[in-house]
Amino acid sequence: MLSGRYIQTEELILQRSSQLLGSSQKPQKIAIIDMKLSAFESRTWRRSSCLALLVARTATCLPSSRSSTAVDLTIPASAQGASYGQSTSFASFSFEPAFWVEFFGNASAPNKLTFELLSRITERGGRPIIRPGGITMDSMIFDPSAGDPVRTTSPSGGVYRTTVGPNYYHSWNNFPNGTKFVSTLNFGNDSLDIARDMAVASVMYQEDKIEYFELGNEPTNYPSTRWDNSTAAYVQQWKQWTGQIDAAVNQTLGANASHFGRERWWASSATTDKSGLNVRPADIIPAGVDAADQVAEYSIHSYAFSTCDPARAALATTPNILNHTELTRYADEEIYPSAKAALDSGKPWVIGEFNSISCSGQPNVTDTFAQALWTVDVELIYAVRNASSVHLHQGATLVFQSSNQVNSAGNDGSPGYSTYDMLYPRDSSKRGKARALPSFVSQLFMAEAFHTSQSGAGVRVKALKAPAGVNQESFSAYAFYVKGRLSKVALLNMKPFYANSTGDYTVDLKLGVSGQAWVKRMTAPHVNEVSTQNVTWAGQSFQDGKAVGKLHIEHVGKDGAISVRGSEAVLIFFDKDDVYGL
Image 1: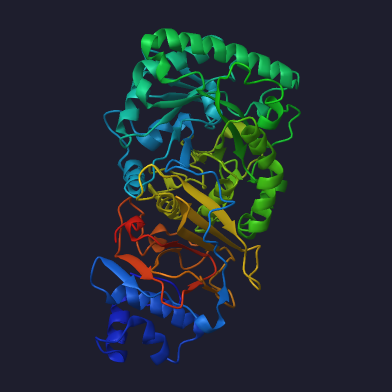
Image 2: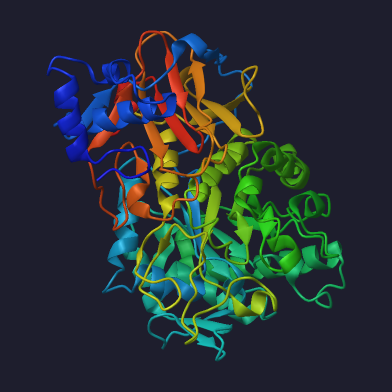
């Protein structure tokens, strides 16, 4: 069933199209015959009727466009100036470990919804790295006699401790084949024994699945008395602990220790908050954090907006999180200095944790389709700036994080899952039925964007300039290159389109690229759509983890014209072998 003010039901479309068109007529000509429709209605009509008219599971149609009013989008044929190259693990995840069982179940009873959704990502080529990280990793301990992860909480749902045993590591076996993990270690309790024991346990149970180690989460937010706001004191303790942990891990592994090499650590994991302790990568690199050549990648966390207090919550709105100019400014001012410092030192960098709005998101903003648009744009902003991976954070409200935040746990102390999550993993009093959220489709967009049929090739990304007359605050475009050749183009029109909008803010473009091209569209009736079944990627929705609806792949016409409505994004493929489902 297709929904929205101007989108007809499939039955009505079939009836009306049979009245208006003969079976030989092409779907895109409905707009010409039905002259009573407005320009906005006719574009919606063409898309909807094409989807309904075609009987095959995969539908290929011409995208709606107005070539006479289209503006030229310049797409360089050369990859010069593009990113260094990202892998299929670029779009990765961070999960709050206190809620591990809610999201993933346990070794013998995995959470079906979560793993269905992960399967949709991996079958499209994505290979996300999993970081069991966040604030609660800094109160996590390993107990060899413990069973599944258990959190110790206050009556209001505040997490004091998360205890994990061997079953925690055994549950990693439920992930798709080849999934790699970050072994996250507790630095917050200031106990070397706790951190070392977790590292040793992780390699005892899952040596082959560990890609990196990470000591501590967001030290910028630790008590100021820990290092008296001294960068040097932080670096000194980090080096002492990681050195001793390395020795213990190497002793445990014996001859297999060479599997990890010397460079096995994420370093920094700081936020962009101004807390008095300067430990971003740009701060700790000149302080000699990598003197022993232990660092594999430098990590920094990214949260441009927040609901941790009322003043910041007032700014956490849909128009603000979809302002491409401001998202780029934040990346360049707050993140890129550390990224550049890492690259200049000869080491990669990652966004080790990020999301749109810290303190668990903003209801009616991050649980809507707006979050999907934000996710794609921000991840590509960081790809252009040469991040090796970006780890989208998932979790639930942490009561101890702020005393006056917008979000809260359930009234019964049960998890209040974050509204920026891509799914609510279990039924809950706070969030209702378990389901994927509207933002999930962004992960399919990203998985297909970084997939390539050419084995061993990285994908390089370049930001494209908005055409003249197109508002660069609400429009972004990116070109993808494989082995120096143009592979894909992503177009995002982030102008918020609501049910009461006076226009649909469609941008009509001419690609100026010869040859065949295929299009997949990420769309919803409106930017504030909260029903996942109305949010689609290439015509399909994924509320319960499985694809619902016919796969809808558009075909760019010979004139190279394509239209992107407000609050919509498209991914254009120039290599047929890269198009999943074709």
